[in-house]
Amino acid sequence: MQEPLFFDPVLQEKIWGGQKLNTIFGYDLPTKKIGEYWAISAHPKGISTVKNGKYQGQKLDKLWKSHRELFDNVSGEVFPLLTKILDAQDYLSVQVHPDNAYALKHEGELGKSECWYIIDAKPNAEIIYGHHAKTRKELAQMIYNECWNDLLAHLPVKKGEFYYVPSGTIHAVGKGILILETQQSSDTTYRVYDFNRKNNKGKLRKLHIKHSIDVINIPGTTPKFKITEKKVGLSTITTFVKTPFFNVYKWQVQKELFLQKNAPYTLVSVIDGKGNLIINEDSYVLKKGDHFILPAGINTWKFIGKLNLIASEPGD
Image (tube, rainbow, N blue to C red; front, side, top):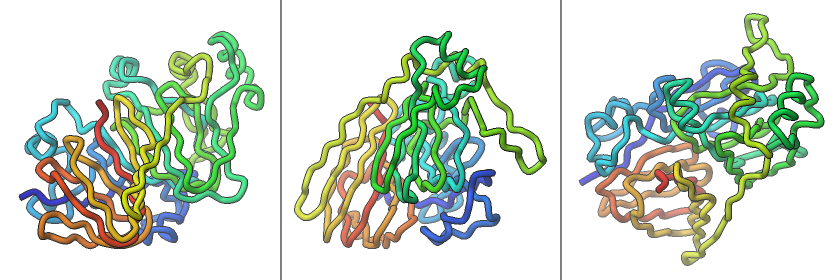
C-alpha cells in the first residue's frame, strides 16, 4: 500500500527575502533574507528529500528516475512541477520566463509557466502583471529608454487571490506579499529591470534584455482563466486553473472532505489550519506548512479537521 510522501525543503536566500516564512509558518531559517522555500522540487538547484516512510532520505529526482511507478509510470525526463513559497519583503525583479521551445534551445531546461496564490499581503500591496506596448519594436524602445511607468501594468492584490502567469508574461511580485507558487520545474528567469539594486557584493544583478524582448508576449494581454467553486458538504473545492502544464485547486476543509484520484499524482500544501489525512485505515497528522505528494496507488483519501490546502497535478 502506498503512503503520502512528505518532504524536507530547500531554502533560498534572496536580496528581497525576509523572515516571514518563520513568523507565518514557523520554519527554521538560517539567515534573515530567506526569499524562497522550495517545498516540493526535483530541480537540480534545490532538490527536496522525503522525510517519512519507506523512501525516507531519498531525493525526489532519484525517485522520479528509479521509482516511476510512484508517478503512474508517466513519461518525461524530469519531474515536471515545483511548489515553492515566496516571501517578498521587497520587489522581485521585473522579469519574464520563456516557453518550453525557447528554454530548451537556449537554456537546456523546461520553460516556466507559473501561478500564484496570495497567502498574505500588506495593505496596498501590488504586483506587476503585463505591459502596455503594442508592438515588439515599441517594447524594445520602452525597455532601452527605461520608460517603466509607461510600460508596466500595476495591479493591486490582496490575501486569498490567485493569478496565472504563463510564459511570456512580464511580471514582478511586489513588496509585502507572501505567495505559494506552482510552476514548471525550471529556474530560467530573464530580468528586464531590477530597480538598480546591488547584491551583497555591491554589484548590479545581471539583466537579460535581448532574451526578454524575444519572449515577452505582444500585446501584453491579461492571462485568461476561469475560477470555479463546488460545495461538498460544508467544504469547498475551488478550481483555479487548468493548463497543459498543471491544474491547481484549493481545498477548504470544514469537518471533512472525501476526494478521489483524477491524476497520476497530486502535490499538496497545507497553507492554514490543522487536521488529519486519512488513507484507508491510516491517519497522518497535518499542520500548517506541511507539503506532500499523494503518489499513484492512492485512489481515495479523506481530510478531517479545518484545513486550507493548495493542490496541484500535472496538466493534460
